[in-house]
Length: 258
Image (cartoon, rainbow, N blue to C red):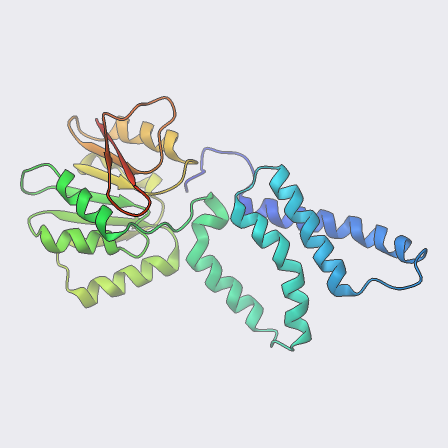
C-alpha cells in the first residue's frame, strides 16, 4: 500500500489507540472526581470530554484534520446512537461502508480527491502527440478523469489503479454504463504495478507517498515518459514544468519528464 515502506502505525490504529488510552485514563479519574462533586457527570459529557482529549492528542501528534474531527465527534455520536435506539447491526454496516469508501484515508493518509473537469481537460492537452499511448491514474477514485479523457482520445489506452473497494466498484460500473472501450480499472496497490508500460502516469494523492512514488516512477518508467502530480510536490525534486489550471482553486499540475 501507500505506506508499505513506513513502519509507523496506520492512522486508523493510532486513532483507536488514542481513544483507548484516553478512555482508560478517564475511567480512573472521573469516578474520583465525582466523589468530590455534589452531582454526577452525565455519560454524554464524559464522552464529549473523551472526544475532546483524543482530538487534542491527535492534533499534537500531527494527525490530519479529518482524524481530529473523527476523534472529537466519535464518542458522543456513539452515545447518541444508543439513546435513539439505532439497531446494533447498523454500526458494523456503517463501519464497513466507510472503510470500503475511505480505505486509503484510514490506512494510508491519502484522501479520496476527485479531479475536476477543467483539470481533466488540461491533462488531456498534456498528452504526447502520438497514437497508442498508455496512461494510468494512480488512485483513480471513481474514474471520472479517465472516462472524460478516454472518450476524446480513442487511440489511447487508459488505466486506473484503485485500492479502496467502493470507489473501484463504482468506477467499474460507471465505465460499463458509459461504454468506454479504452478505459480499464485495476484493483489493488499501485506499488505492485510495473510502471514501465505507461507513457504517462498521473496521480492526485497527498504529500505522504510522493517521494517514494517519484523514485518508483524514475526507476521503472521509460525515458521520455511523463509523471504528473496534481497539487503535491516531490520534496527535493523541482518539476520540469508547472501548469496552472484556470479553476476555482488554481490547481497546479506538476510535470516531470523521466
